[in-house]
Length: 286
Length: 266
Ligand SMILES: NC(=O)c1ccc[n+]([C@@H]2O[C@H](COP(=O)([O-])OP(=O)(O)OC[C@H]3O[C@@H](n4cnc5c(N)ncnc54)[C@H](OP(=O)(O)O)[C@@H]3O)[C@@H](O)[C@H]2O)c1
Image (cartoon, rainbow over all chains, first blue to last red; front, top):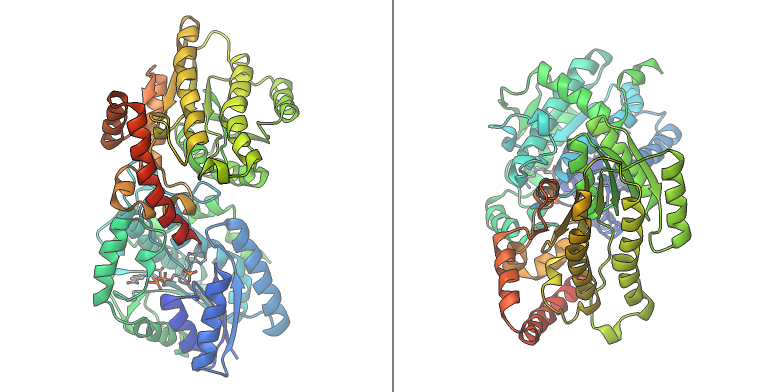
C-alpha cells in the first residue's frame, strides 16, 4: 500500500483529499495543528470509510521546530512500516491573514505557512520520497497570476498588503514545484501544483479581521465543494506514469504565469534554503 | 548602530527587531522567553545576514538584570538605542483579578522599565546621540475601567518619558513615547479586535508600519507618536472632556466588548 502525507488534512480541501485517497486504497498520514480538529477529521473519515488507513500528526507548521519534529516522527513511521518509502507529499496547509503577523522566527505568516513550511517539510521527507520515486503536490491557486515576487521585501514588511502576500505565496508554490522538477526530476521525483478553483471552505474566516471575514463569507458561497479539487490530487497520485505537466486544475493541465521561470525558481530556492537553514544538495549525498 | 530591545521574542518587540534588522542595525535582544529568543535570533540572522546577540532575562528580577548587565559589560557592548517593548496586559475587573498578577503589571511595565532604562543609559556609546523609546498605549490617555492598572501603568510611562526627555535634552538623548491602539500581535489580540467589530478594526494599527515610523520619529527627535488618524482624534478628545466622563464612556464600551470577547475565547 502506498503512503501519502497531506498537510492541513483537518479541514477543507485537505480533509476531502484525505478521504478520497483512503477510498482509493492509500495509507494517509495527515498533519494538522489542532488536536480537536484532527480527531474530528479522523472520525469523519472513518465514518465515511470504515476501512480507511488514516493517522494524524499534530504540528503547527508555522513553527520550523514543529515541522522538524513532525517530520522526524513521520520518517520513523515510514522506516518501520513502509520500507522508508513515501509515495506522495501534498503540501496543502495554508492560511489567509488580514494583518502583518509573524512566526516565532519573525517570518510573515502567509509566506511562512503557505510556502516555507512545505519547502522545509519536503526537504525533511525527501530521502523517503527519493526511495519511492515520489510526487510532491502543492495546493496553489489562480491568484498566483498577475504578480511578481518582491525580492527585496519578500515578507512585505514595507507596505503590507494581505492579498499581495497571499498571491505571492501562491506564486512561490509554483516556483518551488518548478525548482523541485529542475533539481529532482532526474532522480525520479515529480512536483505539481493543483489549482483547486474557488472552494467553499472556511479559510478566510480563520484568524482574519471583520472585513476579510465578510468578503470571504460572500465569496465562498460561489465556491465548489472541496470534493471537486480532491479529484485532481487523486488523479496526480493515481497515474502510473507521472504526468509531465506542472499546473493542474480539474485533472487537466493549465496555463500558468510567465513569472514561473527557472531563474526565479532558483532564486526562491536559494532564499528559502537560507530562511530554513537547509541545503537540498545534501539530501543527494546520503 | 547598536540597539537593545526588551520583550523582543513576541509582539511589538519582535516587529521592532525585524524593522531594525531590515535597517541592518546590530541587535542585542532580551526577553523572558529563551526559546522564542533563539527563534527570532535565527530568523533575523537568516533574513538579514546580521549578527544578533541574545540573553534571556526576567526584567522584574534584580539579579537577572545584573546578570544581563554582566554579559553586556564583559563584551563591552555599548548602545545607541533602547527600545522598551517588554510589558504586559491583564484585563478585567480589579477586584476579580489575581492580586499578584496585578502587582506584576506595575513591576514589569514600570519598575522594570526604569531599571533597564537607567542601566542602559549608563551604557550608552560615548560621544554619540542616544535614543530611547517607551511603549505606552492609547490606553494611557484616559482612566480605563476594566483595564485600570494597565492603563495607569501606561500613563506612568507617558508622564515619566515627557519629564525624562527634558532632563536628558542637554545630553543629546531622544526620548519618544509610542501610544498605539490595538495591534494584532497574537491570535488572542486578534480575537479581541474581532470582538470589538469594525471600530476595533479601525483603531487597529498595522504592526509593521508602526515599527518603522516609531524608529524614524524617535531618531528625528519627536516626543510622542500616536499612530492612526482615528486614534489621534480620540486622544485629542480625551484631552478636552472631563476625565470622569471619559472613564464612564470607556466602562460602557469595554463592558460589552469584554463579555463578547470572553464568549468567543471560551
Ligand atoms: N478555498 C479556496 O477557494 C482556495 C482557493 C485556492 C487555493 N486554496 C488553498 O487551499 C489550501 C487549503 O485551504 P482550504 O480552503 O482547504 O482552507 P481550510 O479549510 O482552512 O484548510 C486549511 C488547513 O490547513 C490547516 N492549518 C492552518 N494553519 C495551520 C498551521 N499553522 N499548521 C498546520 N496546519 C494548519 C488547517 O487546520 P485547522 O483545521 O485546524 O484550521 C486546515 O486543515 C490552502 O493552501 C489555500 O491557499 C484555497
